[in-house]
Image (cartoon, rainbow, N blue to C red; front, side):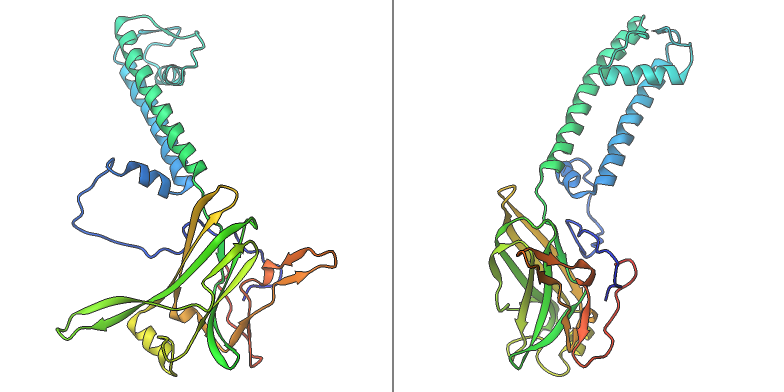
Length: 305
């Protein structure tokens, strides 16, 4: 559970994705460039953009140094002056204090102007694409809980719309990967849908607690179900989709739980309160908090959460 007063951080657009390591795949640096730009983090994107810009100007500065004295009002052989002249040329600032004076410099300026136009246009385009790309801000609880509902145990997960805008036609799918062995002796992982009591809602703007009924049809049925799934290395995956009313575009989010993240015999702490004026108050201090039904102390999330 979270300590009282601890703030809950905003969810990441792509939260808790299993790592994938591949071998034997031929490198393709530019074949899927657009996808790689959209999928990388903002910090990495801006770092790469700054590195490309500074590196390109440093390269052109070295080329200008091949012809000492080719830039007027610049100290001959000065890398700093050549670098700043390159920055002014590539960014089309052109203060006029330093100008090319030789044919070599003018030819190099021509190529740099063309390169700079394409570079700035490319960086501007991919940056705008990242800004304009709609993303979901769905917060998932740290734990899954198993709580009786009308005498039947239910697996429950709580979600919250971090933006608190309208997400219409919201849908949620829950499934687990089961390990099965064929008659031929092959081991395969089969996705098994965990049917939800209610897998969609017309409008998602506050919180939503989704429930899976644990009956004879559920992979979680039986006293040793969790131990069996844990031994198989099974995990539980959530897929959320909806239409963001602000962007009028489809959004999605996903989350992954390990079997050890399931707390049996517990319920989520109440987070919603209706004020006298009708305002809904959501207490994120208690969002990840679980309360044990038998009164014992519940699990505690790591400090980073």
